[in-house]
Image (cartoon, rainbow, N blue to C red; front, side, top):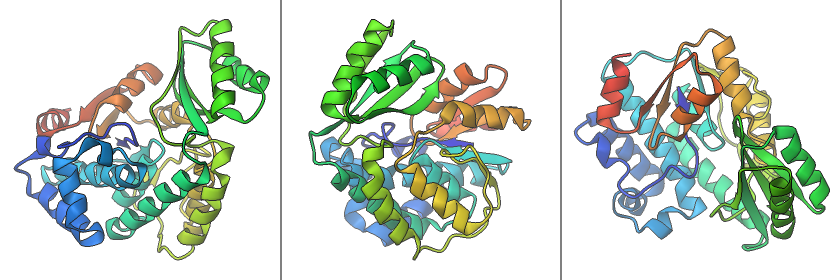
Length: 301
């Protein structure tokens, strides 16, 4: 199973799972952790408030975990292996029982706040580069000057870059010169996973020192090393480094496939990761569990 990160959120994203008691139980736990207003925001919005990083990150963990609990309650098997894209790695750790859901929500809210504060609004940017070789994207970033790096290797021909806004804009031009089919700025509030996030990573390290993490009961493939850690200290270290390091998603899915995984279910709102899986590992059967209907369809696989 894989869990989405920021970008898949939408107001009312939990309504598609209506009628499943497991969803209501998870929302009750979220209300205990972050309050009534947080749960109300998931259902009623407004959208601009939900898309604030400090709300999006706990919202996506809640939605992904709720979908997972619903999957299990309907008889879905426990996965052999889990992973999450960026923020989704925290959802994967909750589902693997390495960290409690109640501890994870304030943790990811702190992570979000730290990331937002690391770079003043308007000074950082991210951009999607389509249909250009990974090495050519890296070369464009190196030639652009300033701080800009390839930070999300999402699928073949789909790379995201991040850094200082002016540097990102120069890199966009260079990528187009090198043959990118499209290169465009993304509507995000910070240059996530770039080296500009190191102040956030430092804050996260201090916070994580106080959080109880145990050995996962399900193997978790992490973003930063494409590794599967079992030692709590090493899991925390990987989470700290992840904040200011690239998301190696192509390698993550290939690691799963190479380990013998035959079916991958995206658990949570949206179908972005399911689409990426089809491009990265065409031999793997890819499903989305974005609402009750698609979840029940995936159960038949």
